[in-house]
Image (cartoon, rainbow, N blue to C red; front, side, top):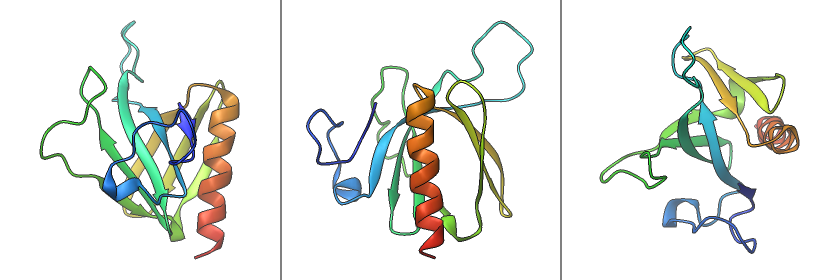
Length: 122
């Protein structure tokens, strides 16, 4: 699911992400569910543009809800921590820890590299 925005096979880029450094679909952990439901079932579209990480929740069918707006995090103060099996987390002093899951460990590594690279440019 992870491609540079203009790469063949990349998700169709909307205007705000057409010149993004990196773009893809991740899953975000919702709550600390003790049930058998997958706590990572919520898909989010994410992109890195400049020194900002954007994310927007997607509908169950993978589309963007009408009038939805992206949340934005400055990468200047983030800490990224690698997890297991494609999981990683992003910490920022102004937000809760975001627990994310990519489709694979390799994809998670790409996100981690891109986020830390954007932060170093800050």
